[in-house]
Length: 468
Ligand SMILES: [Zn+2]
Image 1 (tube, rainbow, N blue to C red):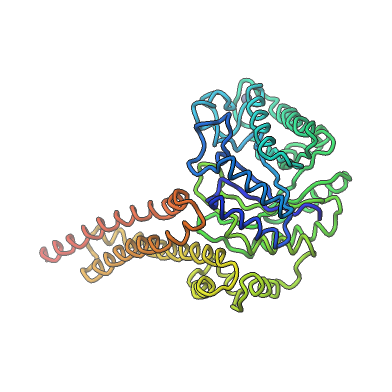
Image 2 (image 1 turned 120 degrees about the vertical axis):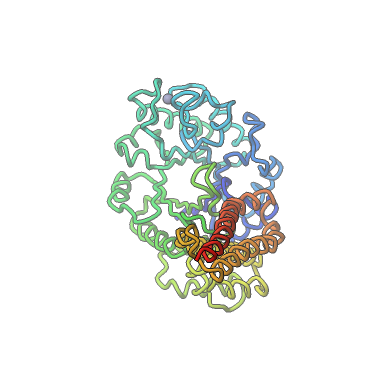
């Protein structure tokens, strides 16, 4: 495998720029040699001035990041979406005119019949290539184009417009002597024969995050042209903090089998999606994924991992420099945070190496524990709602439940106050605040609602007693 890539999605809870330099060392040490950087609103494009995220890095910070990558032989692959996933731009009035379907249309993708959308993309691509002059590979995204958006200009020919536009973006980058990658799914879904309309040398990246469609992968190989695979090495659809690791290992194993079968697969991207869309809640981030980065690197460098438990044990001992029950730790992330807690606490307090990762695991596992506590409390309240409303809950019961409500709030507030100084060593304060707001604020407001309901139930019980 030539290009062993990890995805750095800057939609995510991004690390601080200085800490990100350490992460480049960490992924390089594990055997990764490329990083796919998806910037969204975290790169200070001149052409989109005024819409950058408050925690966007400066050009100087990106320059130092690129320098670090170069020093560690990690290929920096910029990714600039060329069709959809554009809410980060199109949600602003300034770019509304570019929306597919016109100003009242979707903020997800831009109109492919509008020359202005190509012009903006080209300007942004130029800015990225100027900021990263050593770029050898460039990813134009182009996944998940929606074909059912009503647009007068795109009409019935959106697929043709899509292929035409994507091919044009590819040519623009190729003319600069840079290799082009794109996601394969629109072709896979709407017509594999259309791959033939792409300029020669464009490399499709086949992303499959669950069970692989091995027949399709076989057909891609049978074309005799190079392509890349792409796995998901971190994921959590219910917005816990750590993701369950086992399905991710299964996905990487499945790709490992394909790599061994097909020499046409010359690169791989382990994705770590920071959010579903730029306006969805935060999901996964790079530093929390270091175990899976290592698992992926081992697979890409030495083939499918046959003894998972042995690999996990060896990883833990090498990476952190101490013996612990790493199998229990890795398999309890997300699913059983209470079980992971003592192990990850010991790591955080004592690990001779990579204390940063231990602290981040500790922090995110603590978030999961708090979430489990909140979820279980609310579930009980809901099943008792009619009892509360009828005034049928005895005083002992309402007192205990009010105590539960008070403790939920206190535990969460106290837990978050304790985690803050630890986690803001690695993440900007504003993104950590956003992350914890998304996980907890709405739940604490619900908690307040339950306090009112249960307090009223207690009074009603007293009234009912008097009436008897
Ligand atoms: Zn259109």
